[in-house]
Image: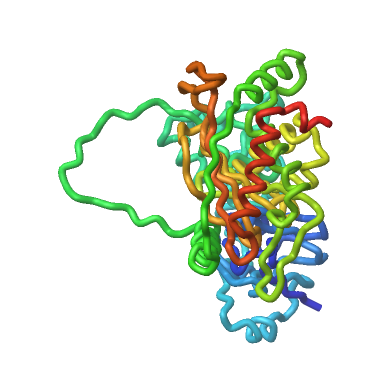
Length: 424
């Protein structure tokens, strides 16, 4: 009996998903474990796995279309099975693709006359090989295994427009196929300046991520009574300790790694800051999971370093690097960006000295970190040049009071001004 495939809930905040790419077409035989499509959620682009054995009888959602969670997007069953009853039960579903019932004999004859031979089953329209007479640089670029590169039509068009050599790109799609996201961060030669002589604009549709950012942070800003505490921290010892650690070899520790660790251990002695507002109660979390805000092209993601207080600088550094790479390629998994108890947003690398951040629900607090700046400081009655960093703690006044937040910042300051204490 045919079974419907619905849009799954791939994250705790997901309400709808967008089909980025179909990897199967109507008529294809599918088995459990096959990847049917790529789905854009509010946090990442994820693979939609098939769990049913049979033939793909119906695709109800077109590429690029957004549908709510639990909407029917496809039907899998026995070849030739009647699915009209299932389609009537999902009146909102409109077929994006229908199975071809007969082949074009002329097309088949032409292929035989040209002596063309298919190297593998054709599962995606994007994988059709280009005619042998076309230039080789984009459409027929040879790999080291002497097989043509697999490139989606959109990626090929972008590469042609930007002059990108596809043979230098590593594809992240199925079977190494090069897709749009693989070209997003590839540097291109500067284009000639073209004067604009008329007013114009571009409307950019909201991505799932941007919709979620707008909804969640809007709710946070206008429902949680924010207040802000700013503190200046002497970073001389932290800068010196980082230099010494990096000279010893191993992973290159960043100031941000030290801040994550310092915040985590400071939460041990200030547990009320490591809390969540749940409406009718305040939850004091005994575990310490630090969300690290990261900017991506479409907005912001917050992967989570779990049990951060128990991890070394090197372990935190390794996790953050892995998360950063996954965030850029939209490969973060739901368990990697959920269950945060406290969040850090660091804009110091962009030259920002001080800012305030909006609390990331359900956390009670978020720490905004500015850059380390050399400036005149007074020590022992003498003026000298020192390294100074400003941090601002945004607090939800429903669960954290000013004295509580201030105590946390003082503890954080103590750890960063004497980094060896974090190792005890």
